[in-house]
Image (tube, rainbow, N blue to C red):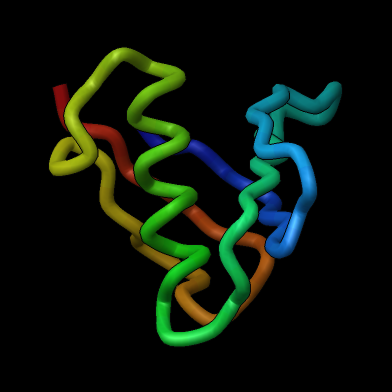
Length: 73
């Protein structure tokens, strides 16, 4: 399964919401430096789906706020 995600780094309150356009909005506390926000996004999406973080991979957008994730079952 592939999920398109819009990331909001440096957020005060972490959250995962599903937007009307099908894009997930993931707010994380971590800054967008040294991959910290990317790691937090993977953990947040995995937790939302009840999976291990190793089952979620960033396919596209490592340096962008708009990312494409792949989820392995």
